[in-house]
Image 1 (tube, rainbow, N blue to C red):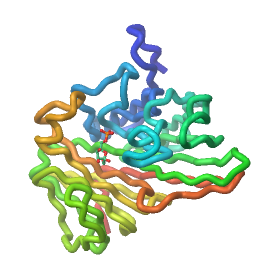
Image 2 (image 1 turned 45 degrees about the vertical axis):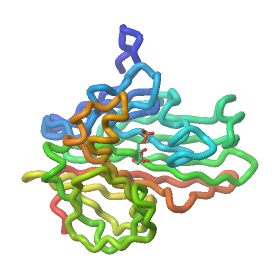
Image 3 (image 1 turned 180 degrees about the horizontal axis):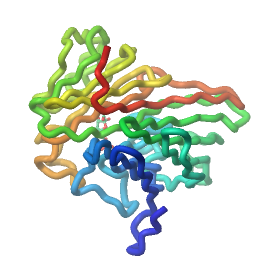
Image 4 (image 1 turned 90 degrees about the vertical axis):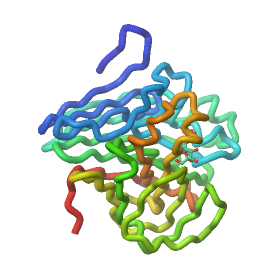
Length: 281
Ligand code: TA6
């Protein structure tokens, strides 16, 4: 546990086998680094704010209780709240860290005024990283939400990066406004600003670059958002370097096309399992 002396944000670092590590800021419980085999697998912008002034640009920001724009600030409040650090421990092959977020006066006064508990578990092994949120309704009323893990993957060159596993699903294109577009490509590549919500995607999506790949398995999350700002949108973001779009791709597991509803006392766990060089069947 690193209580940084320069007043920047507290963070937790787990170290595992095979030169693996994961770093999590208590701010937003944002994973900012995942190394496997000694190599960084996530993208963190060189311009990312790490002082709590805004959501961290990169790693795995947690989107809850609202994906996108709406009654709450964009992507909801979870990624800009300070989460409670619960524990870090070894468990078999895994190094595990756990965090918690509940309602506060601010959220109770917001347009989403419910009592809830989010328990977030980050689990690191030599070749995998899993991030799972257990969502609990501790209110007396039923509530619903959308939620997503806004994962930024680091790639050597977006122009030679291939996303597989989306074939056969439908997507909403947020740039053109087209809806229910059928994805018929086995290999999806990005050569411009893309912002797509793929719905009911088959289990595993993989990101292939050069000889390596990272697979993205989902657990109780229906959808996958694919995003790259490209040059024009990158230039509009103060916390994103102008050419960094070439070294990142967002493949974001979540449930955003439908809402997740929980009755009082009800619990659901959702998340992602990332695996390096996982040779898909
Ligand atoms: O990743 C999909 C998306 O909803 C894009 O539309 C873009 O807005 C991106 O999230 C980043 O949002 P942010 O609020 O973090 O700048």
